[in-house]
Each structure stands twice: as structure tokens, then as C-alpha cells.
Image (cartoon, rainbow, N blue to C red; front, side):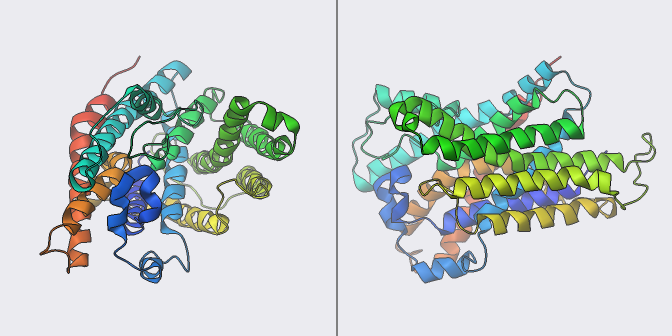
Length: 387
């Protein structure tokens, strides 16, 4: 069954994430962007808050959480009729080529722009290459690395890649879900909730300080499990939506009325997500924003309404389909590429007084670059057939 409404959701999600990150660049991003981050001090804090609706909600979090829900929904849909091996290989083939290309291109963009405008040394050493490798493979959260580069103040080249690392872990979790089964989805969600809850006790033990490497791995698992539960909500929505199919040949929805037995599974998974959220939020240095739960539930409401209205959507606008198809490539590249484009434009005297035009050009070029990445890397990789 086709879900044209998901194209609209993905388009909205990538626009929200890209807009939020580009508008909120600032000196605080120097760990990932280097000295060029100082060029972004062009808006006051109050102006940024008003532009991204920061006093009401977090557009970036809403966009990312919509991506999580769409991923859980579509991945569960694509899991039908495939073996575990072919499913995992096909999904990894789709992610890793674009992730590797994104890290390499982003690293080169940032290094070259910093060298040109801030005269940083143009050097790449072994530590940098190791960091590029671990970031490309999405394992820099598990393997402690450092960069000797005068630009990067962190071993993380792309801060937005944490989303991809969570998705890959979700694929591994899906290995244990051999059928579209509500009970198994719920069991996994409750186990992940237990992992998150146990992590709070782990942080208070002496073992946490005794083994830093083990602590790093367990921290990464706990952080990912929290988000995987939210992805499972998207998977659960697909399972419940599929049970509403009356005739498997015509795939028409008989009724939108759900019984208590159908609702209990997603409700329990949502409960697991809330429990893991409040457990991890007790840890002072754990990266869970105070308004995160509100933004995630707002995105869940948007997603549910859109899925329910799917049968009323027959066509997808060409522009929306294009944005949806290139959403993954844009997400991978937008942070570093957008920053580099902004630096170039902010250093052009003619444009300096036309901030709106600068941002408009930046968004356009991000979209074009994402399209080329999709056309020449993501699309060919996705067309590889796996038996």
C-alpha cells in the first residue's frame, strides 16, 4: 500500500531541521565548525528565538522526531516479505555510502573554508583520518577518538549524525523482529525502557568511573534505546494501520475505529518512552532538553493525523516529492555545507546588508547540493539488488 502523505511529512521534517540549524548557527558551534563559527554572530539571541519559535517549541526536535516516526513506519513496511539478512544489508547499503560521502565532503568544506577565511593550517594527520573513519561508520560514539586538527574541538565531525547512528541500531533491533508482531514490538520497547532505567543506577555506581570505555558504550546504548523506543512507536502505528486493511488485494481501509486491544500496544510503548525519558532526565549531564517531551508528542500528534488522513491524499506535488526524495541527502550534508555557504555570503560586502537574501541563497544551495548527492550516490546505492 502506498502512503503519499509520508512524502509531505518527510518534506516538512527536513525543512524544519535545516531551517533550525542554519538559523541557529553561532559561536557555540566552534567545536564542529572551527573559527568560522564567529562569523555567525549576526543575529541577537532574541532574534534567533523568534525566528525558530524557540519560546513556543523546538523546530529542530519536531523535525527529527518526525523523521524517527517516518523511519519506524516505513522500515516496518519494507520489512514485509524479506529475510533478516537481505533487509539489514539493503538498509545499510542505503545509509553508509551517503553517510561516508557526507562526512568526507563536510570535513573538506570546513577545513578549506577555515583555511581561506581564518588562515588555519591546511593539514590532515592520522588522528583526523581515524576520526573521519569512525564518524563515517557512525561508531564515533562507541570508540573514543580525538582529532589533532586545529579546527575541530571535538571528535564528532557531524553533530547531526547521531540520528543516523540511532537508525542503524534500530536496524539491528529489527533483526529480532522476524514478523510483524505487536507483542514482539512491545517486548523490545519494554526491554529498552529497562535498559534506560538501569542506566540511572549504573551512573551512581563506582563501576561507571572505574571503566570509562565500558561506560561510554553503555551511555551510547542508553541514549539510543530512548530514541529507538520512539521509532518503535512509528512501527507500532504501521502495524495498527495494517490491521485496518479489510481486503488485502484492494488494500482499502474498512474502518478507522480502533478497539482497545489494538490501542493498548502503542499506548504501552508510549508509556515506555515517557518512563525512559524521565529516568534519563534525572542524570544532570545527559542531553535531554527540558521541552523535548512536548515537542516529541506534538510531532506524534502531527504524524497520527497525517496517517489517518492518508486515504484522502491521492497525489503528491512534484516539488514535495523532490524534497522528500532528497531529504536524507539534505539532512546528511546541510549542517557543514550550510555553514560554509553562509560564511562565503557573509563575507560579500554587497550581500551583508541583505540577511534574508543570504539565507534564501543558502537554503537553495543546500537543496541543490543535496539533490546531486541523492542523484549520484544515494539513488545508485538504493538501486542495488540484494537477494
